[in-house]
Length: 413
Image 1 (cartoon, helix red, strand yellow):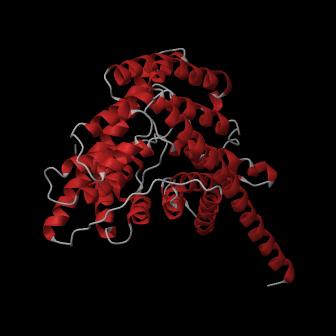
Image 2 (cartoon, one colour; image 1 turned 45 degrees about the vertical axis):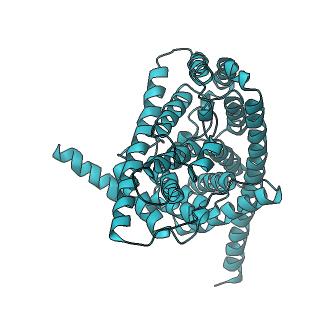
Image 3 (spheres, one colour; image 1 turned 60 degrees about the vertical axis):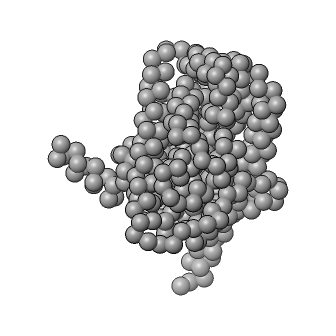
């Protein structure tokens, strides 16, 4: 190898390490600010619960902001997936502040939504700006989108391994090159440590008691995984249904306004405030106390309605809520530790809804440790196969064994 070629390779390596560090630092800092701001608006809403009655006006602000300034980025996470599959033009940076503002307004006034979508969109918008700065081609731009998703996910949940794999898996593994894998891990850790640097803390969960491996336990885990897959299917279909229904309202800003009226009456009028926002206190409680059987269904309904109406946020934390409360409720009939069932449901529903069983298994191990790892892997895999062909992201490409399974079923029926 000549010195000229070696110099070229070293410059290329340095360039991508530099891009990863920039993406990780900027995305991690954006996520840190977002998490702090989200905690502030959540606490404000809890202390002033009357503010939920203003949810329609918050929705109107979100709708107007996207109608007049954000039409090109209104697809959110789906835009990232589409640009990865078929690169056309750089994602406008305005996606980041618009989704940040929209999510904070949604949570301030009591909408039921998550946070991963916000962090991933901010990360994607930030990373994609480097396309022109470093004069990258479309193939290299695909790597930027991977970096943005990885940085956003890793930083908002504090799970760098899961974040790196999620970015690769959600974009369909077989189209990912080796360079993308290494860079995805690098940027995930850069973003994760940036949030740590800003001293922003994440919620911690634990499974203190893990049952021994036995045939009976495995059967129960398979049942839990199957039900988690069905819950994920219901979540995805519910969100898409409300989105399709609200699309019939021709003036987009009216969609979250009308949806906000319905949500305010349902949440404030019937005392269902625990389904507002992220629902983290309910998730934490589900690891020690059995939830009513209908809690996970109501969270599916409220989150699907909130996002379908045009409010902003993510789906993942509500999916955690759905899975944890489902597992917690099942502890009333399944003779296994409640935290164990809640923890498995926590990641299994997420796996089914996003078609990412590997990332969800890794996330479960990062959150709960290695001991329940085999059970987490089984639950996530079963949920993945039982959740149907469509997940929460309409633009996601689903291939592999699951795709072939449902293709065969469709051909038979």
